[in-house]
Image (cartoon, rainbow, N blue to C red; front, side, top):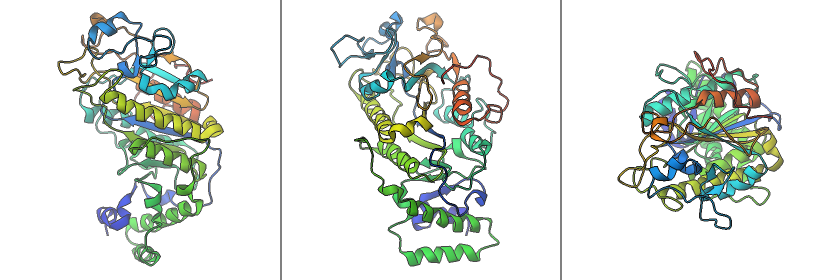
Length: 407
């Protein structure tokens, strides 16, 4: 039985593994208070200029005659929400305002890749591998991060909520992808059938996947014992309906179940707004509303546990400064990324602002990158997880000082 057959076989198709089975061993739950990094990928290239609005730059409104957000005005919540007198949040991000005000949320603007591609596929690959412009990198930067952490006998050290393992977690790190906790532990599966699978894999000792198959069932038993899927949201948190809200709810369940989670990954789709992007309302606003609601609910759900958790958001690139003829935006260069929780020094927008007048733009059309995404990612990995940047981003030498994102 090969891996493809295993992944397509009944309920087992809900499980994806990366790396050899050495990490999946019978174990007790890991330390409840370990550090956790949650990576959130906004796939499709989010418009950072509408997410975190540079209303203080006069070229912003000029470049976007129909989709520019109205600047903040006291008492009017349907406008952009002021952050510091120059930047503002999209009003759909209102659930994140309390996190900004209590200084647990930070923004890094004009952040992105030094590679100039405007291909979604290539840009995502470069960001997740951590090697811009290099397609031959065999593993992802988060997989390398997990391998660098002190070894722990915990099968749920690295988990992606989704159908397949993302590029960032591919490699020899023993990461798991699951569509849902409930379906992973196969509560609804017939126990006799489950025993049959265990026997099948136990007999296939000559197959390298036999251990993976058998020990996956051990992981299922561990998750079922932890009863993670039945842990309700705490502190009155209410997650928005939708795939991303559900993913963040389940990441919180894994953290609270104390199964040894150290790195989690979740995707959120639908950011490729070429047509009808909208301003305060519309297509982009709807996506931002779910995005903000899920992040805010996650922080509320975890409460004091957020001191040990950092959420890092990312997107492969941003959108053009000027709107197009379809009242949307096209593939650009830099965008805005968020860091939430842990020891983050929030309530600030980090990064050098390059300006939006035409001569300040990248190739006369895009927000220029002034913070290499590896500067941000490596600082989060080093300051939150204690991982040096060298093994995470091979061949990269930082050309700018740290952002100072952590206390």
